[in-house]
Image (cartoon, rainbow, N blue to C red; front, top):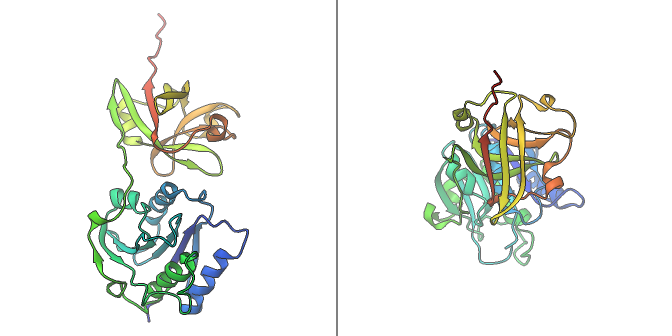
Length: 286
């Protein structure tokens, strides 16, 4: 029997026994199954962040890894439970509520199956409708990772167009600069990760030490506007000073050295949080 890898993500936190219960279910399927935690600190009900954290992480795991992602404000409703196979031959077990948005756009999904809960559900849990993370997702994910079931045994096939996805906005060049969005907050540090790539940013002939006009707005209201230095790392500025830098996903990020930018200015994430970056002309003295 094949022994795979199981990776869990949720908004449960670690202050009670919910995460441990999922580990226990997986071990009841196969004792000693390798289980890892992506994060359980997703802000409660924040499906967008769950979607992004999968994108941030799964490229660094081998083929056949099974990810279970549970941020499920619609638990117990008629929303579907699904398993997808990605273009990189990994699996994601999750409610169909938008969690697959970023993976579908930036990695790609080969196939989707709806979980047949009459077969793939923890025995004797049928009367419980508030902990599908334990009773359906961890159980199904463990059965798939351990080889007890194959992907084709999950349930009926679904079309890609049938799953729920959030609208995404591509960054673009306009008015001599780039416009994008705040994709995610780099927790717990509070840095802002944008969807403007380093490759795009270099089109502005950006060099370390140069200055850029940065504005952040939401719903037409400007929240922040300032001139920031583009630094190689946080050491490029003094403590308490803002900067632009390239994050670990090769995108442009905004930070305050050793402080939380997001908390300081009350910044959120998603397509309603627009970022504009313009190069400040260099003054040449004769």
